[in-house]
Image 1 (tube, rainbow, N blue to C red):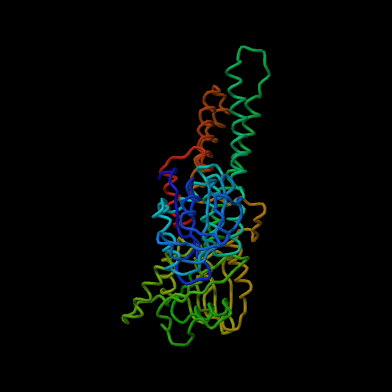
Image 2: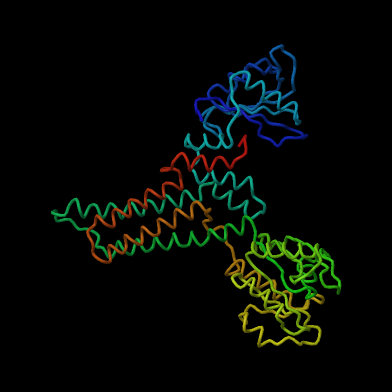
Length: 460
């Protein structure tokens, strides 16, 4: 990827639309577009001030009009990439935008690589790497909550926190190195136990950020919840009650649900993907058998399982077989049909489920549904509250780095507790400082950059 090239791409989704935008960035962008643009006022793009728009036509080499356009000019360094950027606002549609793109290439630009506009913004110092990652999160946001997280990170939420922690580590390194460099001088140095306390505080900050990564994933992508149980225990009725819709077919005939039925609910802006699975049992029916196999796959993928038992029937080996398939999962046990005579042996149920994760409901009449919803909310959100204003939400790449940094800080603190020479904690702290630089892109390899920006679409 040559950053001296002038790049171009279509910045809008292909297809019929009101507007289609062709973007050009680089030191030749204004000259390239000037060759194919004729303004109504006969003014050249090079003559207009930055952040101005000008009306005219795009023409080909024969001076035939291709499209009526408005061109925006953003001159370096006051642009997204900190290079000269020109945006050609065409009429939407495949032919017009593709032809304008083709003319830009014919006149000296090249097609941009995926994410190259944002990569240039990073390489030219307009944004750091965490902000570049926030751009793709912003584009992929599925909920208002995930949009807020991406917007905050784009404003430098992660960058500011990481730079603060790096400075705290650097201050400790300076104190330790001063102790070594001026060992024969009569200078007052910070004692180990004070520095050890400061390292412990940093560890706690990292721990909180690492914990929030999982919550961030839930906020961004939601959480999958599988409703499971034997046939005819009321799984479909429960899905309908939770979603307030007649989403699933409900009959008294076992095996009605042959395929998984999905519904998305929102709790505090977080998507909960509820999956009503086919009743799990041995069957010779080919279609139902496929449904059972799909149910088992959904269970594997689910972060939370709602096990539905029929309170009107005795607890049996079929229930036990299903429980054995999900014993490693986080499970809520729903005793359904409490509006009918209760024949289930609660003693057996308590052998397999914690009492605080058992809720008695009637999916048909809505009894206990509010309690179940609160239980789901508590298990998904932890303390039930997400304050995005106070939280620093990181991604998996950041989490892996912070986990390594935390280990290094623990090693450094242990060296201090054991009163080892200053060189030992210093070594770990310097490595931790460098690793944190990978988050903001100060110390990062080309492989990491390529991996991040390859996730972007062309034109971003």
